[in-house]
Length: 132
Image 1 (cartoon, rainbow, N blue to C red):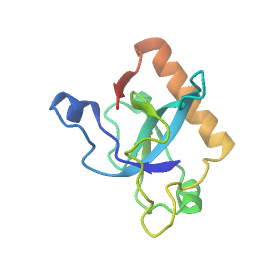
Image 2: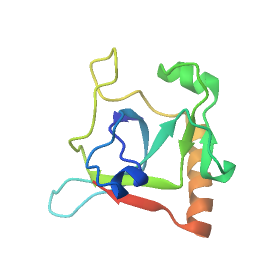
Image 3: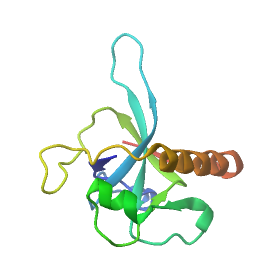
Image 4: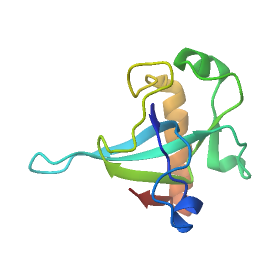
């Protein structure tokens, strides 16, 4: 999980080139390019805004948030839209109060819950991917 200027789909449709807010984001896929080119990653955002449809998100357990150094407000990993870019990308941001860009790894059980929910959503509805 890392800090990233996530560009929401509605922001991209308004013509924005960069997300208006830096936010924690989760890599859900990474594909290496041939001939030593950069990997292409697909990321989903974490937000405090509760989803309109519970099937489009996974709520983060408080213990996971604490372990990663996030605030105490409720948060959700959104899985119905994503950004895709060549890693490392220019929209990575330093985590506030830290030297680097990452918060750390999601615990395996929670990451699998995110991936399982994302796969189920993708199978039924597809995912809106905003290329960066």
